[in-house]
Length: 330
Image 1 (cartoon, rainbow, N blue to C red):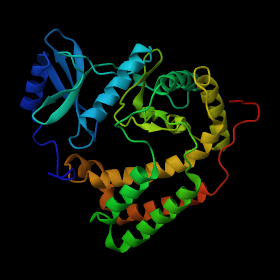
Image 2 (image 1 turned 60 degrees about the vertical axis):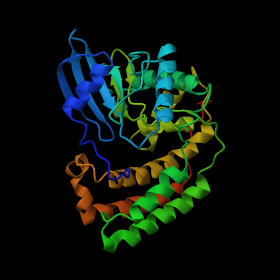
Image 3 (image 1 turned 60 degrees about the horizontal axis):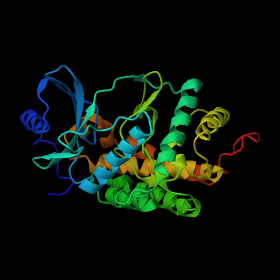
């Protein structure tokens, strides 16, 4: 069965209950589905009234070794007193399998939404990202990939080229806009940075607030430049971004050095994420959860806007990169 054809239809409530039973957990109530497109995540309460979250990984996305690397990284971070949602060790292991599904169980850790306009919270997050990268720099992932154009642009380009979801009358224009973007990226994406293990998808939605930040969802963990875990936390106009970078990097540098040359990777990383995300939705379209959640994908105007967005991003890539304030030293 191909990745595109696979879905979670065989992951029934009985299958989930049996899987959790094998770990020694007895579900008393719950099995409430939480928001997750890539995987299937459920909250439940056991017979002792303790709350947990079970995460069933999308088959054929990550190998066993790649998931275990994620879990090992989580365990290292937890041992280094980084507030991270890490899987529990049940029956002597963190990763379990049942009827072809890999899954893990986490403690249920609630929290408030991270406030993107709160500079105190940004400073806290900067410190802990420095600590995450302090741990991440000890070694690199062996089985997980390293961020690059092949995964984030070349493969998505092939997916979009073969997709019937892209309107025929717009496909050539869309592919041409991505090809131009790719050519520009080749000129500005460099490998003169030290790869380290990253959270990989550190946007505000993956940070909860519990008297401090709590980082969740290492599902996209991979090797890459440090700035990948920072740029999605910065927003607003250029002046606002400079202020936020000043706060973020000053806090980050208390625990980990930052190479200011990596700021030139912000717009390339943004461009790569745009292309990758679009192809990700197309790739998952056969999953019943996607058409209802992304109805605009069947609208021709949506694809016209994507072409315009890619063209604008191509222009941004050709502008001078962000420069830090003169009084900030890294």
